[in-house]
Length: 190
Image (cartoon, one colour):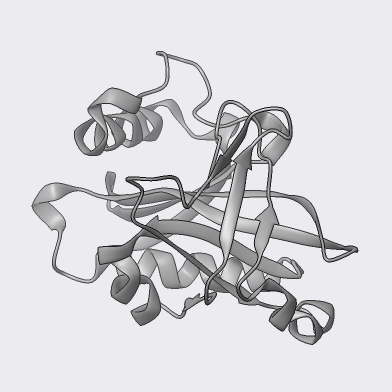
């Protein structure tokens, strides 16, 4: 198995077709238009792919943007569109890729990593090195059209890590807080 990483626009076409097929398999109602980006280019999307020879076994995207929280500016990144091929699930492939993404985000110098996941997936992400940010709510969308992770009917939990000295020094300010992520209208929430 090999992990390859690309800016989203630079994914080789043969791999991109496979990634889109995996995303369609996982989220049939939320597939990007053919040839179009899945994510807002302003979020500097970076795709990480776990390959078994030329076959994409698992894929995820890392999104990033500056976030202002509790009067401070942080370089933030998070996971999006984490998916493993159905036929390959249960073998640790997704966990391996998610752990590698954690290492990549830390190595890139981000202050904090933040993302939401469905509550039943919390243990999976914890097993790959992520931690729950207690009581945190990510507010996605835009300031004019907010999309918070605690909407009725959403069963989301905020995961992440505090990576830089600044992030670690202010970690408690993220606990039990509403965090204005505002990734825009394309991604709405990551």
